[in-house]
Length: 215
Length: 251
Image 1 (cartoon, one colour):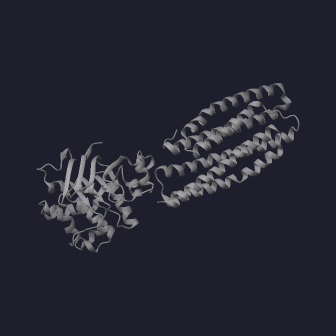
Image 2: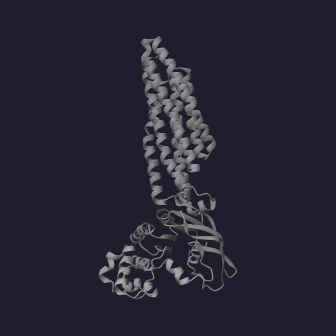
Image 3: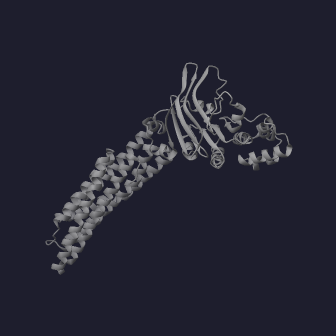
């Protein structure tokens, strides 16, 4: 029974996993490029994320075709509607990574030697990257406990964001000449905080996919 | 919501073959209940039992209760003709009588002793309007009902069922022989009719069950596996067998 549909669902899951891998890689590379002042890494991220819009469209089209042709119900309907929602969060994560990459290029260019990235930004970046990885893993494995773990991590990222803001505000007060750099770093921290929020969305969709309940 | 029709621990055997096993189901007033399940699961048997159409099947044996407005329809003093006036049936294949459209509708009321022309005229018009076919046939009431299209014939059959003013309408795959436009008309009609009637349908069309029913009951091998609000059944069914059936993994 229903071999074709099962194969299509498997393919959809693979497309989503591939896209998630690209988004995760973008976060990892951009974090690394920022802390090591590596303009080349930032450029790679910009190139890599440019294709994500098209991937998003392709997956959306795939979902709409499946909705039309298979008229899914129950678990199948939840799988496809989850994919349709998750793909938007993944694309946004790609956008945020690209925004960070652009700012990184700017910072590296403007401050070739004097770029000081607060440790807490690195921590935020690691946490946000981990949250995205785990949210995707929760979806792939249909694991509600892992998804809840992702949601719980969000508070840590929010707390780190507050600390980064405080540190950088202090830096602006102390070194007015370097205020531009501090403001850009605050914006980067905000992007990371948004990435964590998207990971939470993905985790919520992973829970919906299993339970049918929206948080 | 109050159940106008309900079964309690209903068992039915055709000879030694048990076709219904301990089925208890409430069918609430002014709601559409859809019975779904693979062929041979007992849903049509269940539907036919609700107005005692299985009585004449040789070797049939029924235990448990079917309560219509609180009264067991298998009570010895139950008048089956009167029961069928209250609980009407529409079948899979349109089966108008080989007579005029008018006489098809007037047949039931006449059987129940109504003879006055004006009263019959009123009943015929009201029933045809109720079945959303009045405008299509009002100028040819004397024509044979067999001259109509399948979709029109099925609405004539619904009008015929409405003519005796039932409370409950049972529909056994009433659209499976119809084209999509006729099907859509009957589905719209079901949505209108439930304001006045309680409707129980058997359907093999999962999308139709999703579109028209308020509650859904899934039968398998004569058992009622799961019954619940239609949205819940088709989004988060509780039983794995329900999930496997509605997603086409078997059946």
